[in-house]
Length: 291
Image 1 (tube, rainbow, N blue to C red):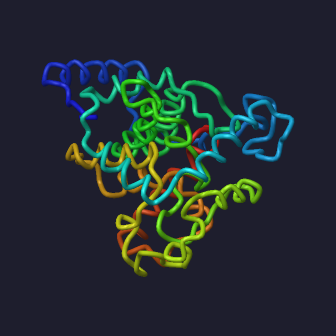
Image 2: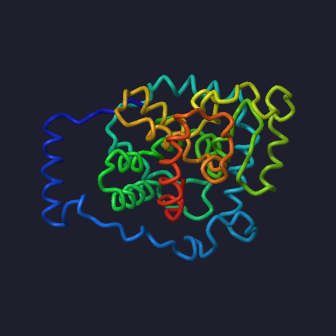
């Protein structure tokens, strides 16, 4: 996918619309944080949030099937093949908003809490972080685009299976080529035993095929919406800061931002960017359900 920047006339029109909004609603820079959104007690299905143990939930069967296929099929060779194929960025050319609108047709099967189109999650995330960080415009944009890679589920982008695109709590972004750590329930972990890489001694050590302090950018993550959107932004010459690319690529790497795992592979830049990732994930996207 190639990102297209609107022409000067479109930009001028957008600026005029923003000025009109300021007259009606006030300038965003004058907003004062009210502590963010309050977490509701139950999810869209009347269950507790992130309850992967609820065997009676109809949604649970879909979620578990997604993670089972993901744990089995995400191999080192598969990831290299997918990064090579989708790194060509030859699927489409569109604006950011046109891409956002495509998510009206996307539902994340790894999410136990929500079965709504993903565009709602993007808009909620961007608005929530804009409210509390009005001067960090790069962070607003990052929130808006962080899940755009889920367009890989659509026919025009290959219609990849859910297990090759979505996932959370590190089920998506498990390291390929070193010992895997997961934040998901232990009963999901048993599916790794069916992965062809499971018994490869080269991968099953602390560092695997990597070296300590090599930097997460040099670690091969399993392929999915996170990595694809990172490639799109990077190869299109984005002017977003490195912290934004870090958020886009690793926002599903829960052992990293929840438990402090993988620090032995991180470099100094990773540690600085991790501060923004924790702000993004822990303060804004956890009550907004999908990731």
